[in-house]
Length: 415
Image 1: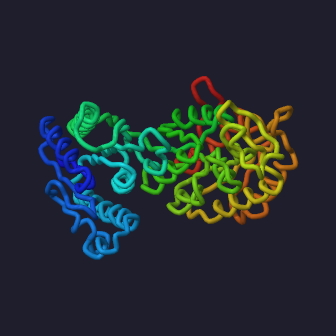
Image 2: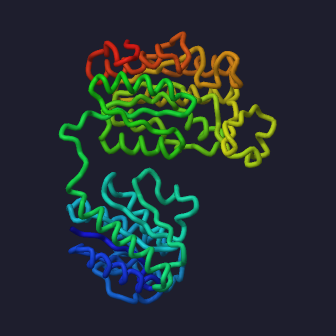
Image 3: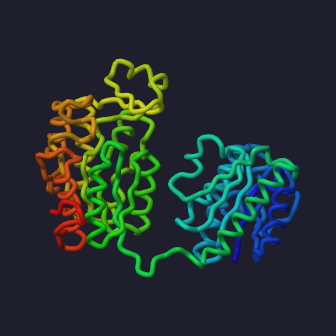
């Protein structure tokens, strides 16, 4: 059982030493300390010293010290620690990773944590844990524990926080083998959902589960799309029901829930069967009204709740979204189908609803038709949340993944 304990030993040596002793007291038999520091002298020895860290990043520690460039040192330390952890994990030698740090340490250690797969314990004690942590967590199951006070000495606060961190890590690695894995795991289907497309995914999920699949639903909030793409890329997903592609609108227009430019690419690259639709592409997401950039102030908005404001996508934006969706689908190496709900793409894009805009929908659909190449595009006279549309989407994916079509679901509509 090897726990890797990482920090900058010139500034966090006493704290790392304290956590190491706590891990030993909890019965962790092997603790590998990595020194990610550069400029000062390490306060305690490490199993993997800073020279090895920077060599792993292709850098010379003495040259870095002479340059006295803290930013470059942090970047290279992150690369070096990531390389070491990746190599050790590939060799089967990493059972958990625990880090301590402020902004520099958090950047370094979480870079390595994001190289590790889902399920392997990752715990970062950080002074940044109570703020915006998405840049550090990314799409991984990474735990951030708020240090409360700076990691600068052992006192009544840090003693409690660091002890809890050690005990939590010990518990995770010691009980990992007991697991919660089912005796017979079912093949995984990934599905994307937003509040405004929930009825569609809930209905489709019943059909897929009734047909022997386990459905992972990802909330299309940027991080959700990134997580799904990552799991597809790792080869864990058998099929994708990408109903809610709204993150593409945020990436295009500048909303707050972008999943980046690579959204809607992993399944295509790996040849994973996918059914794609245009759920919630009628909207771009912002925070409270006062947070909306000045350039958008004259646009059409809908206050979803006090902290989320939605902006209607324009005709031109829909043309561009349609082209992007179609081109990414056409580049897929595996089975793919695009489903178009002609009566609306979200709960608020329907007759009588705030974002009902036939011209914008027509621009989206026509652009998809024009740029889809040989991709199968199916147009349905349904709203995206109609049970018939959900059944069509689920059954299309089933036909790709298992060669069959579901006949029905418990209490629900079939295909």
